[in-house]
Image (cartoon, rainbow over all chains, first blue to last red):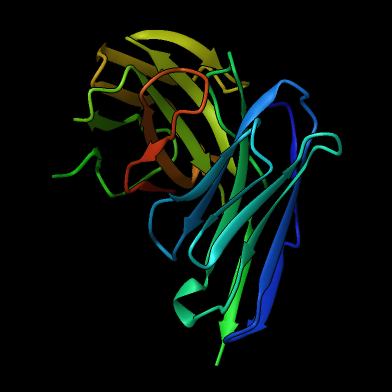
Amino acid sequence: GENVEQHPSTLSVQEGDSAVIKCTYSDSASNYFPWYKQELGKRPQLIIDIRSNVGEKKDQRIAVTLNKTAKHFSLHITETQPEDSAVYFCADRTGTASKLTFGTGTRLQVTL
Amino acid sequence: DTAVSQTPKYLVTQMGNDKSIKCEQNLGHDTMYWYKQDSKKFLKIMFSYNNKELIINETVPNRFSPKSPDKAHLNLHINSLELGDSAVYFCASSPSPGGDSEAFFGQGTRLTVV
């Protein structure tokens, strides 16, 4: 994609609460939207992704929603745990592009 | 088995030096990338190669020169290093250039220019 905005930049929640991170993309041709988790000093790793022909996808405590009309997609983490603390990145890619365009990242802190 | 491996993990060097970072993937992927992550954690694409051919070259100074001897390797050479080059450089690979293929990242190379 061309540009991906991500909010909030930092998020602090108490253990057990839910966390929501939102992204907006600009390229209407984008059709793949992954979310990466990066722990301190580690590599980004895929946690969940969604294709443009799907509106919602869930994997245990993690879910992603996509609104193609509004060009929004969101990550939802329920029952947060301390090990969820990390930086989360959204990204998008168009069908023919060869790059993932990343959002600016959200630092999630789960407190006890 | 390490899927995407890059060396070295840490690199400290003086301004003006030339250095290289190596990357190898054993996943059989066609596409490889270099990303730069600055101190604010922004991940920016630098280059993308598909089957040894350069397909993306973002606005990167020509002091940075990628080289892909085969589709399993993508090295990054940097000439005349500057303070602003200090960052973590991630190599990544994916099965194909587009579509919904996941990118797998290496462990990163923390470059510090002093």
